[in-house]
Length: 78
Image 1: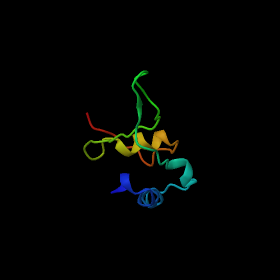
Image 2: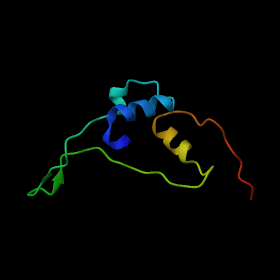
Image 3: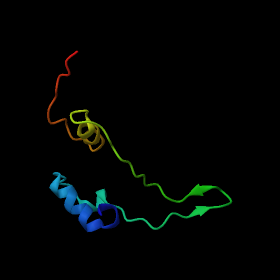
């Protein structure tokens, strides 16, 4: 499972074409600890899942987050 294995996560990034320094893409964090008095978490890492049908723009959305240009444009009829 990628979320539990940073090495596998780096391999997946390379497979998807990430050519940057993996230390900038992967951050291993400790377990979340919430300060009960402040009701605030010490973490600043978010986990997100992107769902949608084929050709909905999932990859384009993720590409825009990392500054990669869209690989192709598809006109939607209608």
